[in-house]
Image 1 (cartoon, rainbow, N blue to C red):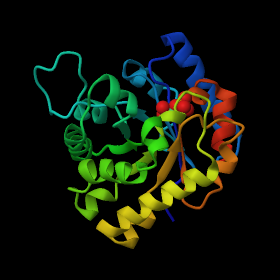
Image 2 (image 1 turned 45 degrees about the vertical axis):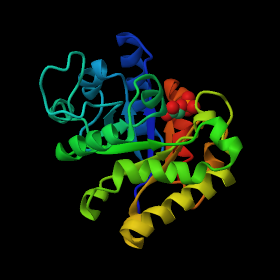
Image 3 (image 1 turned 180 degrees about the vertical axis):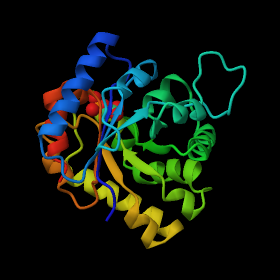
Length: 254
Ligand code: PGA
C-alpha cells in the first residue's frame, strides 16, 4: 500500500504569530479528528520551521516540510538553505520544482535533478512538482511535457532512491485560480504518470509511488479528487492557510 499524504504549502504567507496560531490549530484538530493513515506535511516558510517543530508531536502523523532547498551542500550562496540544514532541524520533506520556483526563480529540470540528489543525500523526501501551463493544456500536448519533466529531473535515480520520491501533479492553470482539474482529468494524468514510472522502474516502484494532486484543491472538492484510484492525496496551497479547511481536506483523504 502506498502512502497517502496531504501537504500544506503555505508559500510566502503568515507572520510569526499567525504561523504559530495556525500550526497549533491544525495540531489540535488533527489530534481530535480521524486522519486515518494519512501523513500530514506542513510546509511553512523556512524561517518558521524550527518554531513550528515545537508544536508538532514527535512520532505523530504530522511531519514538517520545506518549500525548497539549494542543490549545493554548503558555501557562498547568500540567502539559500541547504538540505543538510533542513535535515538537522528535523525536517522530513522538501517541495522541489514548484511551478512558482520554475517560473520566478528560473529553476531548470537539470538544476532540479541536483536538488533532488541533495535532498535524498540528506534523508529528505522530495515532493517533486510537475505540471503544464494553460497554453500547453489548450494545445493538447501536455501529457508528454509533464512526463518529460519527470524524466529529466528524476529518471537518473536508482529504483532504491526512487522509493523515497513523492510526485505532485499540479496543472499550473489550476494553481491559485479556483479552476480545479476535474477528478477525471486528475485521474487520467496520474495514471499516465504512473505508467510512465512503470516504463522506467517497473510496476512495483510505480505502484508504490504516491502521486498527489495540487491546484485549487479545497474542502469542497477534495473528497472527489482523492477518491480517484491514482490520486494519493494533495498538495494544498490556499486551503492550507485555514485550519478548518485544511482539516476537512485531510479528512477527505481516505
Ligand atoms: P493552491 O496551490 O491550492 O492555492 O492552488 C497549490 C500549490 O501551489 O501547491
